[in-house]
Length: 355
Image (tube, rainbow, N blue to C red; front, side, top):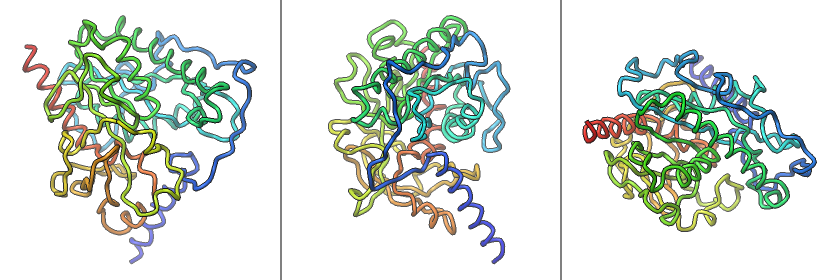
């Protein structure tokens, strides 16, 4: 009994810590942000990406050492370019863009997005993740988009584009590429694919693009297509995750279903657009204790997103998870093992076809 009480206290503590960072922030009201005019604010120092200090993860930096990863890293001779989501969200911070040389914030990115998201692709190739001047979360609020939000978002994209160009020039060495990102990161990668990949010669080097937690429609690309099988290559997959609940309108969810009208959707368990109601099909959810829990999720329905019930994880995790209403933050780690296996499968398929 004492062990169960200790476990319960531990998980509540973890949730409290994450909530304080804004990762599980949910509200049924309008958030009031402090702000300033973009033209009267100074942008943080611009990264060059020639220095390893400008990268959150780089093969030449200290390797990530997480117990839930296998030791077969980088055997497939491919690269992964991953862009983290928005964690710059303090409503009291009037800055429009984050400072990549803020060590505390960089550590937050590594211990959250890199640890629980980017690692899903680590076994598929050499992981590169640029630190960038991400736009503050308020830019996604229509109140702030016209008076600085769009400028801040574009500045963030220019960092991503610069990082990718430096990566191609200095580090790629002709290897095929997986593109992956979440939320704001995926939004920037959509634009990167439009400008640098779609219909261009480099498109032949694309293993797959995982554009997760953003809106992708069939009209966003000319050449790149939605992949609809688990080993298809050269296209993209995309989804947004929602919890099945009767009172969804009560909550100010990160992603608005109305905004997702006409969005394309991939089922990250079956890798097509069909529902999956067999728990045995789910490969695994990476939980906060760094353990992977298989057979915990089914896809109840698919519309503008994938709709799931509270994962079945046993006491006390299921109870704790039931308190979370916004599943946007879990778009990747809910299907962490499914993504890991799929990325390896698509990479192997690429080499089978291109050898």
